Length: 112
Image (cartoon, rainbow, N blue to C red):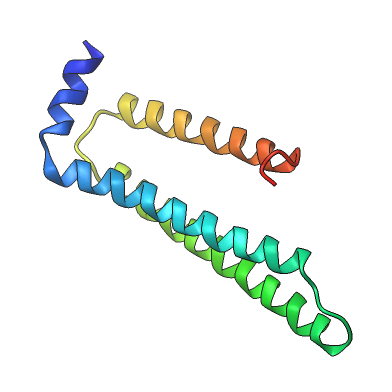
């Protein structure tokens, strides 16, 4: 039965585009975070170190801001959709669990 639901959504170009846009945007955020982490691990010496730390901090802030905007855009679409409250709840629960597991993965140092 679940595959029939997927088939229904797969035939809707708007839904497929929105999902792939969201996933692509998460990839861009991950790239910005990776650039921040790389910069923080490759710090120069002397005065250059100050600029390197600042660049890493700015990249980290930009990555977080992009991730937050993407997250808020997704939940704005979910809140304003015509789906039932239960489907919205299940989606939010699954999304939250996945996000928490990703954060635990990164926290444990497995993402580096």
